[in-house]
Length: 291
Image (cartoon, rainbow, N blue to C red):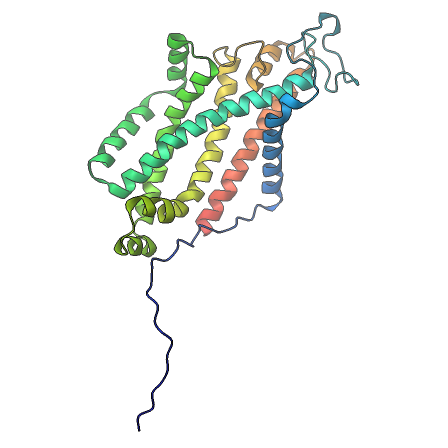
């Protein structure tokens, strides 16, 4: 008599989720924790500074210039008698929003075009790659100065232009990552199971490359802050008397010998912010290589 063995029914296999690297937690360590904490504090300042009870950042008191620390002026005053703390907090807000504007524009252009170029290839890949090469050959400072001279768009227009300049950098990284991920088994399984291209790009492809997106965003945000400070220092970015980290450095540059405090405080904040963003990017990049 033949014995019949009962077995569990075999379930149809669907496309595997992109688990490798997609849900991985990166260990920040104490340098990364400090860097992330400082960036979050600056972002919180940028959001809340309009609601804080601060002195008017552009209000001048020529009878109280270069005042030292006091209850009325916690960081003292600058060479025009303006409250240094108020100007510093507003400068963080202005510089961060300017840098984020450039990053948002660059990501909105570079991320989808890079993914489509690497996924679809063909004529779109060829045309977009040539456009990216052309944009990359244009010196960023020259283009920013040209836009400022021709259009007078202010800092917002400058940062939108900077975002267009940065877009090819994100595009090239996303294209290369998409080509790499496109050969993964879970993506091929998604195609064979009949998933739409939009679902494959959003559900399976993007999680596999988002770590590189974070790396590029952190690096380019730091570079955006540096460029904003540079063009504002030259007088073609944020215009005085509005406060940004660049205009604070520009207005106080002549005071370095007599009262270095008004220069060193905004310079230290800018340096720490850029350093923190680069530390976060380095840790994320190292975690991606190990993963």
